Image 1 (cartoon, rainbow, N blue to C red):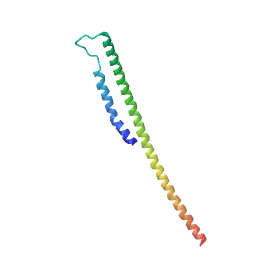
Image 2: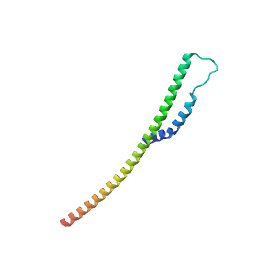
Image 3: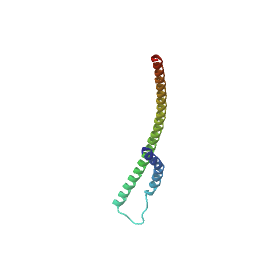
Length: 113
């Protein structure tokens, strides 16, 4: 479940930056054929500034999220490698325990017989 979630986010990250690059010019200053009142111009300027700041912040967050996902993927790979090493160690310990039990049983049977 978490692996598919990470894969989906990882697949969407490259598109967030391109969407932000496309959205920034779309909200740039535009000249109007009719005269608008001062409040409307001020509100439009505030909205354009807010949209620009939001797009920049989204781009920054996407970069940070991509770095975090890369770190998570690396940590997951390291954890998987550690798990494989531990599994190998456990198998070796079980094999040694089996040999020890067999030797102890053979010695016990020799002593009893």
